[in-house]
Length: 326
Image (cartoon, rainbow, N blue to C red):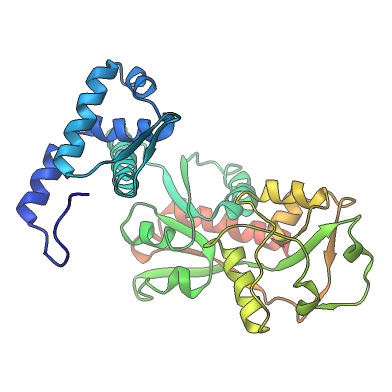
């Protein structure tokens, strides 16, 4: 519905006018409607009447010449066009909040160290690093951005974050110019096949081939998490049939809980196993060939690598790494 005819380039003046006319409150309305599914609930949050909210939504749809929501008896759901607008609205609002916060911090001379990292590193390795970091005299504030693969390097490139702690992989670091960035390995990480103690695989003493695990019930995170990418690479490398996991769970805590109940087996990193696994509840399944280690790297722009807070953070990474690798 609406939009430009196929193949016709957009009128840039028209696009600028559209962006100028879309007010932040209208973007907030779109996000709230997507979350709550009713005009009444969204209007209440924005301190406006449902009629005013409805009028504002009509104005947005008129500007964009498309319908953003399907109206059903169960509430309002995003259309395909609405999903695109919702993503834009959420990103704009998040960036606006971040801008206001950064301006406030800069005005008070209180700018945090901004660190981007995948979630599993944030609550395992990084939490230990910060425990050591805050034993030191300085009390620099830290803001952690838990990002998916591919997103965090973009944040570093655009100076949204100061430091990136992530896997040393082409998908993460390919876009970074080596002459501009300081990159140092701070930890070696391995992934293991894990099952419950009550699983029949826990009783195996000899190593299994990956082909022996094809018919197992797998619990895996969705793509494009690193664990899922790694799993897909294993399947491809050993020319095995594609495996659909029984359960997809983004959170490692959820994955461990499901494995503990013997619902399936999973692929987990050393850090996650150390941080969460109860020794008597889980078994590591020996598999041949074993998975190669992956380096965890500390990355920042060379122009800031000698700042005291950055060198102190790197020092804490190295301290914890030595402790874990003993």
